[in-house]
Length: 308
Image (cartoon, rainbow, N blue to C red; front, top):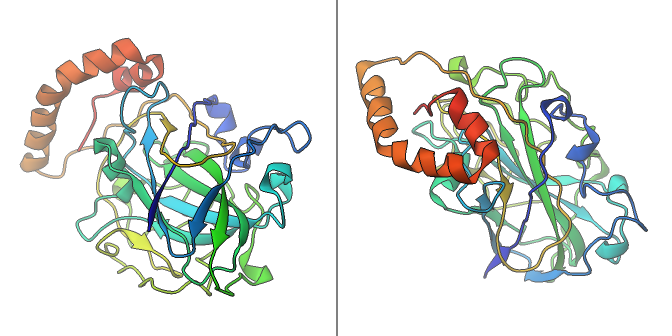
């Protein structure tokens, strides 16, 4: 069964707040209850469901257009009513990692054409009320500390089913404190990366089945790992800011954006240069329209033409 989740992430933060341990990386953005104003809306989903999560630009007028970096999904047991749950005390466990496919394309890049990110709720997950956190990390300016951009969003789910699966205490973490600014998957030059990409945070919880470890030099066919994984290598790519959307029930979300241009990189071949030139000519009209509609997008586009 497939579901849709609405993530409306329109909050932008300055680069000074883009560090991995910044409070905005928690979920939700607002203070703990009673002032959190958590939405009393919860989607009911069966364990094993696939949720389609659509991410869009800050204004909602265009598709997400970062394309370098991982996507990860976490869950946390609310222990009752999620609308009254203090998410700062959540014990998060990772359910999914998405990196690159065998060709070196990041799963995040698929959002650029309007495709959703698909998150699978563990089939054997114990029934209950949970927060689902879907997170994108954009790495196009991660060559220096503080350059990675974090975009987490959360929804409230009531999971049904007869499963008994729960994470061990050692597999749960607090967010954002599980990340460090110098983690290998956060402080990284993805344009000159050697070897496998290392996902930040914990491994996927061991009770989750059905996933296959990703090949060290590419990733699984669908870019998705639902078990502790071995990540991937990289291809060039870069892009700008955003927010997010999808359909079915939703809850507070937190998301951060820093306005900064990606660093252009040298092409490794004449074909790469030709491809970039072709795409630049093809996109010029679209770029002008997006600049008109979104000041944030303009800041990114004006800094450097998109590379492929």
